[in-house]
Length: 386
Image 1 (cartoon, one colour):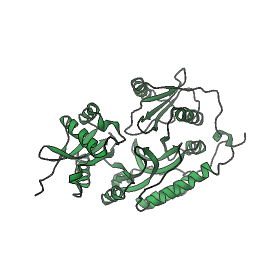
Image 2 (cartoon, rainbow, N blue to C red):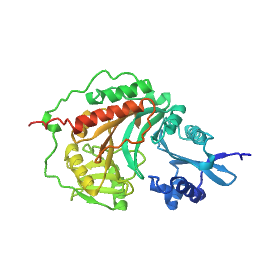
Image 3 (tube, rainbow, N blue to C red):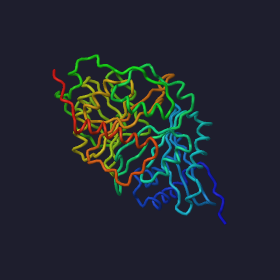
Image 4 (cartoon, helix red, strand yellow):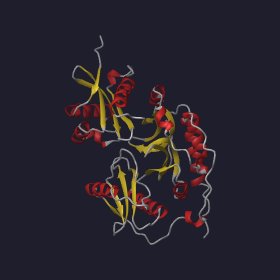
């Protein structure tokens, strides 16, 4: 006879059991190091921005899923794990529904996103059953025992779409990607394409005298990042990447230019979280030179996001070899409006899609990504002449 499974919010004293569960199921291959570091996990369980759900039989934890949320009604759900003996009971779906209902009540969450693995179709089907919309794909985003491609999905309330900022022209090379998302989410059209209004040489790859160097000091990096957020200036190019904290700094000697990164030692995955630019060095120059430094460090994958209405930066990112792989409508609340963002990625390894299982429009996203990859990598446009 099966015993009843209880769902509840986790507490700090559950940390050791949760870590043991991840170790048992993933055998040390889970990409987030927090799940194997009991002290970090215990600290997260005590934070107000985490809402951690566990499933238990008597006092034994057999399932876990995590919500992390902001003060702007935005959240992510991740880290689903189920004890092998308890599979086949829709336990992940039940935990996600339980956690979302709680967050809607206590934090007024309007948008929740999840990334799904593609080694099987089950996670994609699960999020679709819960009403999540498919927004894009992250090719070869992680590498543990093998390459992993993940899909981006999100759950939206009506109020999130009602407050969405739409008064902008779309970069024309984003049009095919946006049209897939528009159909998937039932969004209104963005009728106009962006036309460059500055001289073409502004988009060519920069060759200035800016010099940057790598500083691998996590605590210093975090402190500088927190300080820079309080002294934002017009030249700050990029100051938002949700739920990531930097552990790596790329800086000029005078600290007028700082690039804040999260770098995973485990699978050489890197996220550009923020760019602070006091000397107006320029987005193109900074991204180009920071990417070279990261590649020399051994980074195999870089990711960052740009607001969809910032078409000049989008143009620069694509000329620097970054490819738009997902489009996230109504992602970030600024004032009273939610803004669309585009997720860009760049891989320094040969793409590998063995054993990938894609559901529905996720196959379209992969095809669209491969078309852009081919254009950027095999059919590059000549550098703009001055």
